[in-house]
Length: 546
Image 1: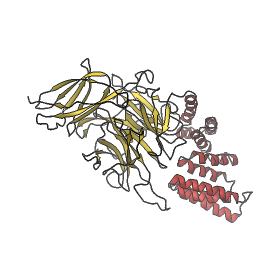
Image 2: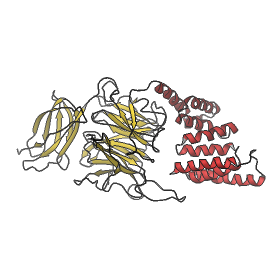
Image 3: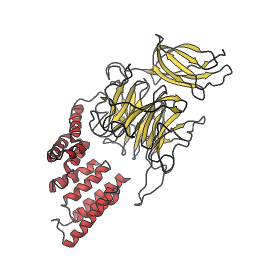
Image 4: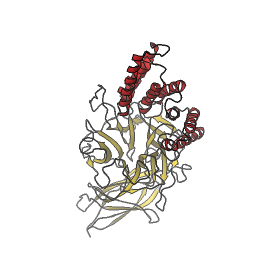
């Protein structure tokens, strides 16, 4: 509720200013009190108590409407809670009264203009800042104003050449007046999970009496009759906790495994990756830490699996990367054992922040978010493809209006490649961040030639591996070969003997299964597609004795 609280104080500023002295003059005694309040306000701001800082700055601006420094700091408070629309008039007020009231005024006003789509004005402010700081290269390097100028110019170009997509807000059945983010969809397109701060679970209050909101995990199912997502509810089971931060980062394609980020005061101090599994009853079990070597004493988040389940991707802020938060990958060694993480390299990772990844159902395309590369502003969504040599291609910005000058993150694509879902705090949403759906019928993101030509349709192959007595076989090796006998995927059956994979549709395959002590089996199949939704084929395989 911090943003709402600041807006309330904003209205108070208007009221107080209307009754303040027109000349803005105060006597000596008043000035002493104002200086004391300025000190208290700055201390509150630096300690992260924005509500107290805003209350004090509001009192000051009411008594001294022409105080440029105070107007600047009110703009700072609004900008820190991402309310740049409210920040702009206070930064402008400060600039009009005294353009030298703070070294960062032009920089922060430029950022605020960028976020409200006033790109020419933004460029003018950045250039003023650059000129003012030309004799202080250290400050210029810290702010990286050249990168911000590049963002403005790219945004102007991309907005003049939009990609051919239709974007819809997922609506009030899923989005709320609070923060809703990080959608992840099962391969069959029937379940979506996401993170929300809506106050259904919680009830804690801070010292100001404001409700403290926690991230928790919600889900919705596709209503084919109504052709829309059903009303969202908290996931059933033991995933969410009342006074801890639990957010989903992804759900496995088969919908039975969920990767989570948890940050609490007990078993996840600082933030770690956890895994929860769905039980036979449909409820989610107690999340378990993924442990070492994935989790460290540093921040880890955004875990997602490759479609075959053999590679885990995640971000970490541990030392040794190319930026603050880098993307890493780890190979599966066993049922719950992972190899030492490997940084995916400087083609993807930059000196800025990366995150919000998902692996496409084709098993070789990664979508990720970054404040680096050729971003339009804040986080943009990018696409990279693993080549046959195992290297990642140069990331491609997905373009406007998928990306905007605002924060655009966490894109996931359906297996039928018809829709993608992502998070954005763009103007016009229902809350702080909302989730959106992209119609990809005229913009095939999985086409081999980077967004041109026909989309790559995918279908699901699933089944159960059993022994001669019908008992499920765990860890059976399932190899998928194409019509030329080239291996296209290898995976293992789970504890219930089930296997699950998405493959290119309308193709012939051979499903080769082996398990220690039993005869190997090879089954030829033809995997069709479906004009409606994602086609799912079930191929159960029974292995015989040697």
